Length: 386
Image (cartoon, rainbow, N blue to C red):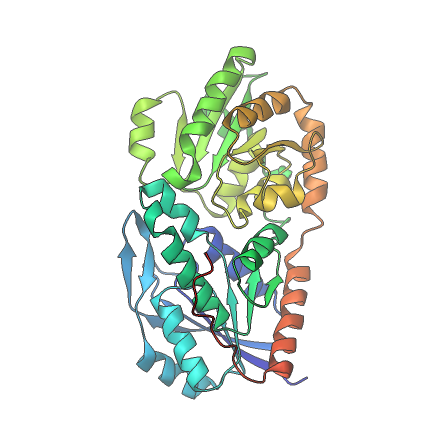
């Protein structure tokens, strides 16, 4: 097959620090350059970095409560100019915002095949900000958007089943991978542990992610506090930033809030901890779970998203059922009773089976199927099915 020219449209990409941006970068970097020529249409980055692909910058505005993210504005003129020059064979829309919708409208007008990705449970996020009343409207918008594309890619079978039940069409699985060379137990750093005030025999619980309501941060702290009654030799380190950070730091000065970490520094934070704690219930995947496992950390999480796919109960972590706060607290206690070193070895072995190269191969196959099989765009069901 001739080289495929693919235009990737996204409202977030590196150097942004979030799961969507990082996963997308890994996917694009893992594509075979003999098979794909990539163009990236994105909101303009707000810090300098060097791109290895053609990039087209579009205007964006800051998202309320997410100052580190942008919402891409409609850009039909920019897209027309970019696509006239690039002549894409396929459009891959990674985010469903105004920029993505603008790309979808133009692609349909030009009869270009479109793949889309479902990365974020926006309809679930709404309940954490007192906006549960917009859940149905948000879900209807997402369904209409994705059903106007030829295929929607999701990271877990759990999300695939949920979307099919909500009448999303042509939903295919594209799992995320992890860079097991970058996230590796060899990055364990005794000096970093010392900077946390950790002494011999103490263990470190680590959280990585946004310090925000939808990540269920208070539960992580509550579970740690209760676990200390039985295991007083544990510390809690939280990596990330967000709207709740200042409040949590004032309430819990005994917790180490480290801020955002990237690159080798992030790898050292993972590898220098002993157990990963992740109480979020809004993930479509949760890439940090695999990053922790690659770093030889057992995981305590809810039985959903990446944890449901990769964590083996009682072997490399413990999982609680969704919405079971007491079960999550119990899972942490059960994990702390394990041999965390042996459980970490098992976690590392599990992560090694999830390579980005395998993910890229599956994406390549799905892209070729869509291009070969393109006939006409699916019709949108207008009636409410929520």
